Image 1 (cartoon, rainbow, N blue to C red):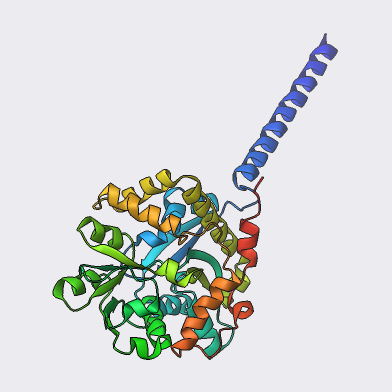
Image 2: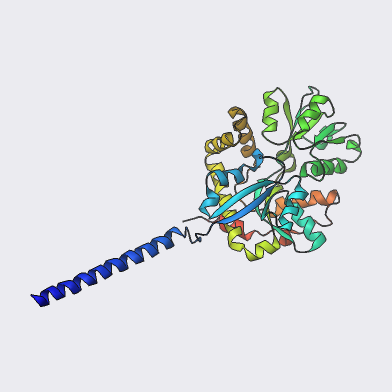
Length: 348
């Protein structure tokens, strides 16, 4: 009896130990599983994105979708958005370290690299195609299909050195004598429609949803930059070379989240419009939907985060024409495509 009791006690002790061991292993395994989603560590990385302008813009919807739908968080990243002014100021914030990533004209990486060495890289496409449309309130101005259609017009743009200003300047310079009387009228970001209303400009180059808002008021869209310029690296996700070299995993996770957002926008346009309506509650939902349809149909919302060589060359060539760059041939020194290539691979 004593022996049986002793054996039962030992067996009980063994069972308890086994249960404890199993529980311990279960907790450890559970922690490891929870701390790793597709191999990603549990530690949340806090990053700052410096964004062009002084507010949110619909053309940057992929970034906001990645935030609103939790794609960044799924990748273990907490994003803070900081509005940083014009394109040059965005990349300056990245180089200074006050932001880890920039969302703005990606060619400023090439400009910085040409002047100061290996300073930065473009790792993802946010807007592929010049997401700017020309609107007018003048009946005499019809659809502009070629540079000649701009002859004699006063064109309202964002301030130099914005892409908006640069492209119009390039178009005028390339147009020669035919466009010698065409003038650029600069105004602060968001002030282009006011140029039309005051009579200071004949056509205003605007983003969405400003183009659709103008249409709702009776103005007409007479100039499509996406159709006019074709594939164009208009907005990219930029990073300093120093940060890239020491944080490749974080960069990959950022680009993967952006690709997830792009996939969503093309897979579920209505869902993307709902996200946009939430972000811009003061706008008419019909205007938001119209703007998003225009962006998707004219391919300014890319299907892939990959910055292509053709789109890059179009953007850098424009800067060469106006004197901001000496050479347009800098894809390999200013763009790092490996992150986007990995992010676009089919995920299991």
